[in-house]
Amino acid sequence: MPNTMRVQYKQKCVKCKKNYVLATSRTSYVLCYDCQKSSLIGEITEPAYKKLFSIPEEYYKENAFLRNIKANYLKYHSLSESQVTAFEKVVDQMKSEKKLGMK
Ligand SMILES: [Zn+2]
Image (cartoon, rainbow, N blue to C red; front, side, top):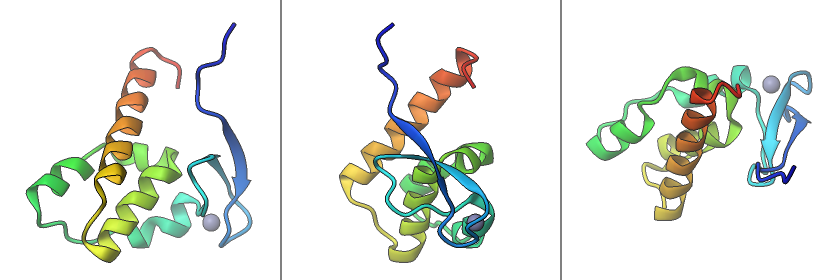
């Protein structure tokens, strides 16, 4: 059976060095949800980004890439177009995986 899924592997959180994080080749800096939680809290005022980031919290728990993008936005208050596209792509993929009962 051909494997069309993204390659995922488990990597230890760089901060607590205790929890494992499911990372993809896209994720270079991995923090577990617990360690990154505080950098995901912040006010988002721009409607487009508000909409982009209003996904179920479990998505952020499961995916380090989504956490990194949100943390980046909260830090710099902007994202590149390719970051937005990648974010939407991952969310879509997670949505369809959940619908298919793969997760
Ligand atoms: Zn951690």
